[in-house]
Image (cartoon, rainbow, N blue to C red; front, side):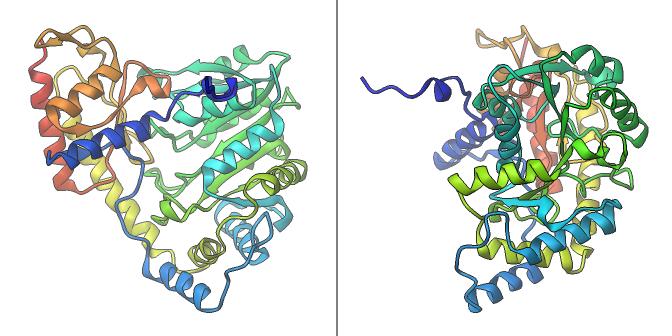
Length: 397
């Protein structure tokens, strides 16, 4: 009998991709489904970036690039980090990959071994814990509920650290909660981590430019931990380039070298054309980033207002990303036509089948009381979706 490896058998499928697939299946049956399950900007890639890609094709940039990416792109990323974040890196500390997802996985596979512990604040992006499993590591999940704005405290971090702790994964602005750590909050976490020099901090900053607080703060700004921070970023969210698959890390040299070695064996360098497009994104005009952020902020305000109108929802006001993550535990235990809602995954299925709105249950994010709505779609679609959600939930008794 054919059997997959234990490594694969231990993995859970991506809940976000699964819900998106179920949504598409209903759409194929002619059902009008509003998909709020996918973390993907609904904007088109800016024209000047597409033009750069066309030029790259015309100029025959169709050969293998270096594993870590073209030097010109890595220099553009170094310049971006200095200009926007006041952080100093060398091009050899940058490794470009096939999306920020691969960037995160590269780092985890490079530094985590059997039994090593990784602190993962919850709610977390679905793939973090699965990547740690891939590396035979141990997830140490630290919960943070809506009452603390889904952010862990220095005391919680300290309590989670053991002699086996090798890494902390931090995501700000956060997927799925939209929460953003302030400079003071990051300083508090850095103060704890300064006492433990063997812990690497993986700082996922892919939503850097989708924040509504005015300025992005990176934990890499603190001297006491800077030499142990790996910044993960990319062009997917800020420039509406999800399908181009171009992410990167800025890392201590030993981690950058390790990721270079690993990536060289299983994908080599990312798409040559995507790299040229990304270089244009970083060196070209940034008006598009501001325009998209303003649209997301308007939608954020709309979703918060509509969410607060739904009985039983506890709604926090996200400061970044494009997700609303309400606590909907009020509906646990309620039923419709004899079918009971046992958890947020059940609630997400119910909203899809009864309300024809695709969401993602919070269990996948380590927050079983919550549900994630992506507001990366038009205002009209969002208003209609929340109307459907409210009507479907009203049927539960």
